[in-house]
Length: 158
Image 1 (cartoon, helix red, strand yellow):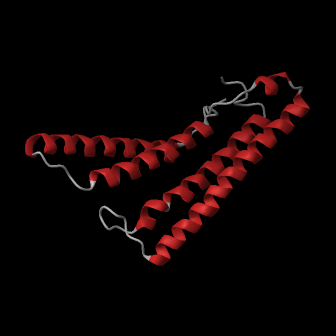
Image 2 (cartoon, rainbow, N blue to C red; image 1 turned 90 degrees about the vertical axis):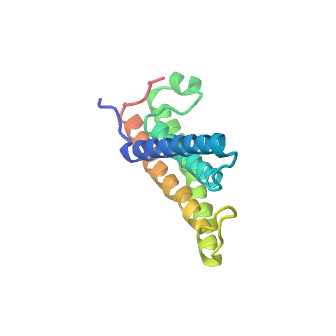
Image 3 (cartoon, helix red, strand yellow; image 1 turned 60 degrees about the vertical axis):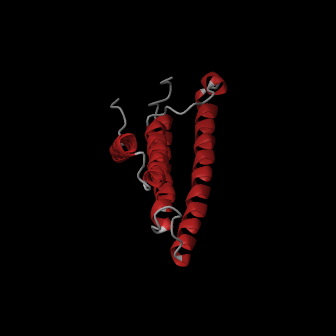
């Protein structure tokens, strides 16, 4: 079976990591040469690290690489095992759905209130919109991995 792909998230995570590295390197060089640092680096770095975390979590989800306890799952017969897979997936979808809902609500409120970021004064919703968007992508990956596992793929790749 072909390895599942999460190209969008892999590219996004790679770009975020590259930008964090470049921003940090530039900041270190400037601080070394001038004893001052760029003001924007912390705000952008935190945002990019959160982006990297969610994109990486989505890749891990699609590849069925999240930490899990599979003791019970491996000892159940096929029928109950399939039920357990569905329950596991529904629990994951419920958590992600809550993040999408509340993250979307927070983003909408920040947009309506025109809240600006404390460091650079950029619209706060620009940073927050990625939370519900990437959780929706993770929900898609959760459906994909559930389908694959129910069809017998990606089941025992520990």
